[in-house]
Image 1: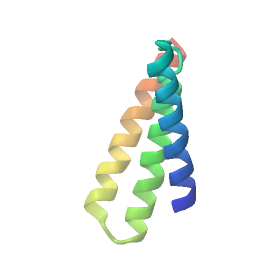
Image 2: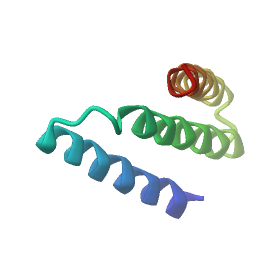
Image 3: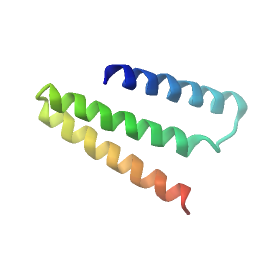
Image 4: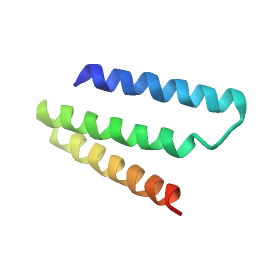
Length: 75
């Protein structure tokens, strides 16, 4: 699970660097969706480590990020 989280982090960092360098904002919703998936996976790893409070916070943040950005994509 940690490897997947690290890979998602590298992908998000590279997409955000590309967006910053080129000035294109088309990739921002996709980057935010990847961040939401990463937060969801972090929530599962925190739940596995019995850190319930942090896991719930990460689940809410992931749900909010995914909901907003999926609505932006399908608008």
